[in-house]
Amino acid sequence: MNALVALAALALVAAAPPRPSAHAGSCKQCHPSWTVLPKDHPPVKGTTLAACLGCHKPAADAKPDAFSARLHRAHRAPDADCTVCHTLSRGRFGLAGGKQPIGKLAEGDAPLRRAAASWAGSALLDGAHARADVSCAGCHAGELPEPGATVANDRCLACHGPADALAKATEPAVHPDRNPHHSHLGEIDCTVCHHAHAASENYCLNCHPKFEMKKLPGAER
Image 1: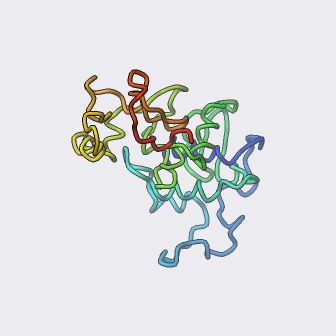
Image 2: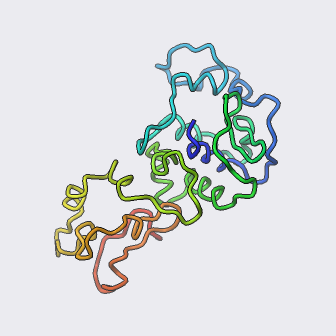
Image 3: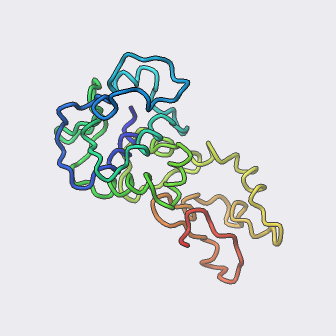
């Protein structure tokens, strides 16, 4: 499972200590029957997340990973314990029952915890991506980003592009020259306006405060 996909599980923990569960990795601890599976899911014998990963592979680069995204969203209850599915040992975050730990994560890494919690249920762009079943790895690939790191344009355009089509689709009916996706500044970073874990803001208004422009998704209400 991808390192960034695992970060979403941090959304489930508030003050739970980083210790392994006695039944870590077993779905049957909470689900004694398989009625939680989709109706068209084939019969399965495995009862661990490691068994699930036999079919549900990690996210491909810059693409949604519906299994991990839906799984983490469904388990974000306030009293959920991350250690039912995950282990944290010697600063490494792993999947219980898996062969290897996943990524490196300090126990007090507050920025990543906040980002994962925001992804799980905010009104920002990260929450919108979660509802579209885009996991952390869909934007960040397999890297644990440093606080303040941004996503390159090609990652955004992998789903929202190509750039020319995006510019045409967002061209205003009135004053078509006021199109931030066809800027007189040339190519600018998507993250200048679009912030995943914070409120988005229209960069154009810094110089053109009188422009009337559509509110961005994930902007402050």
